[in-house]
Amino acid sequence: MDLNIKVAALAGEGAFSIGNLLAKLFAKLGYNVIAYPEYPSLIKGGLNVVHVRVSDGKIYSPIHRTDVLLSIGKDGYKYLKDTLHAESIVIGDDQIPEGIKVNVNDIIQKQSLNPKVKNMLITSVLLGILNYPREDVRNAVNKMFGSKSKEILDSNLRAIDIGYEISNDYRSDRTISRVGPRKYIVSGNEAFGLGAIAGGMKLACFYPMTPASSLFHFLISVKDDAKIFVLQAEDEIAAANIAVGANYAGVRAITGTSGGGFALMTETVSMAGIAETPIVFFVSQRVGPSTGMPTWTEQADLFQIWGAGQGDFPKIILAPGTPIQAYTYMAEALNLAQRYQLPVFVLSDKFLSETSFSVDGFPKVEVDHGKIIYDNILEELPNTKRFSRYEAQDDGISRMPVPGVRGGMHVASSYEHMEDSFSTESFSERVKQVEKRSRKISTILERENTLPTVYSKGSKRAIVVWGSQILPVLDIHSSIDFDIIHFSWVYPIDSGKIESIFKNYDRIGFVENNSNMALYRFLRMFVNVDADFLIMKYTGRPLFPHQLLSALENLENRDYRGIEIVREDFDTYELYTPWRY
Image (cartoon, rainbow, N blue to C red; front, side, top):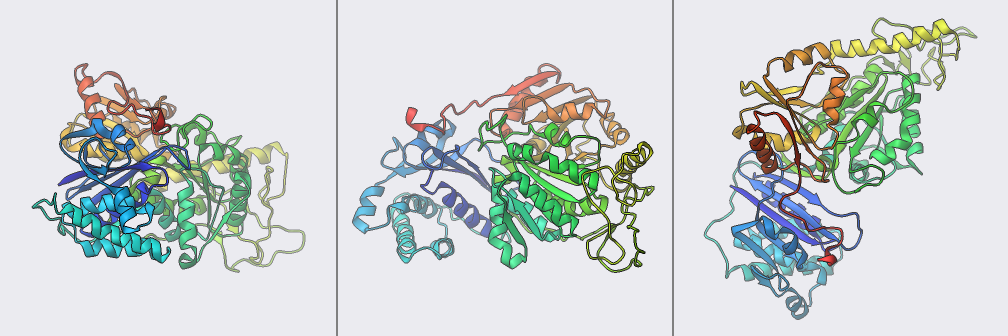
């Protein structure tokens, strides 16, 4: 089974609540689920759509086909009608031109229901048609609205019963039944948050910016159970500096934002670089430049992250592409930051951050503090002496006592310094510290698994992707004769080993969700690689599997050479201002 349900409603009419409910109901029965939301940057008005894909097989990304459309109002139908097919089911209120029409307003008035339950009415008709156990739906809604007023909860429960009664006229023979153990639904940002907690994070400091904000909303919701502190600072600059200060004190802390907010954090990046203070920056990319299209997705900030902060200093850039990677990479980012005492960047994007996925669970992670000293294992220093905080070690990593450790007193500032941490403008000391810091790069490449993941089919052709765009490529992998090379560790780069991987292929193509092929241009600074073909998309939406297949078919006619620019071919209706249509 591969069922694609689209829930469409104006902002404030509950599309996200219904999408989340459907995802959890199907995951409870063991189905694999993906719920991908789309919405304009409006608080009220504009069309919200959640793409809910349900399957008893392995799935990775949303697809364009609509098998069931729940149109709360007429706008959803207008927007998604071109994705319907002959066997699609459309359920909505009496504004839709075809399908199962539910006289929502009349029912609400006659039954004295809360007007907000029309989404539950329409959804319950679908669940009744699918023979989904009604009591399980009622239990799920009890959990969803248990903290709301009794009037809202009762209205929703009555709406479920009414919807199931209406469905009797359309009931199918098929019954949705359990296909495996219960799965759990997490968004990408929730997976990042769980990974941060598992990795020992104790402080998250942020200033909200879509699509990073929901990570911190999640952390706030679990802060008491997780025993963490979450702080909204007055701006991005303060958020970054508070997080650096916490890390200096030995507290594992993260900060996060999106591209525009990160632009304000870059001075702090440099300070962490020269002070060699651990810090994790979470950056969820969206459409730019500037404010751009704030609620849509893109992979265009790689060079901003790599170039953040003036001067030369080492850093690590990670770009997980799946919910499991989001969890493990965020946890490991905290280890890497302390292990190598540098800034670590975890890149996401709107597509990964806000899409919800079914998972079986998450692996255990180990906490590694590297050379951070928390205990009084040092001898007391004589007067006028300071600890050699920046001692020139062969691996580039010095011991770092946290404040309060006996014998560990030192200075951490934004100035160049000597080994004993005091500021200096000595040319020879400057060279010593630059070379010390740079040795971390070779140490990282020697000790860490920095290579891309290769999904091999034994092909002589390869598709290269990074971050979240692995998801639609994995969805089509079984139907194409290509290996997949996925970069989730982006920097530093082991040039020789990556060149050895690329030499295995006669044709190499890059697939990216931006207009400048950022990863391809980035790799070319370090690796001898010439792409035979490029597939790019920059509409504000992720690549969909059918678009990739179409692009590859076009390229096959050209011996897999050239450039394919993917545009939206199934919807020209603008969510931002549906009233125009």
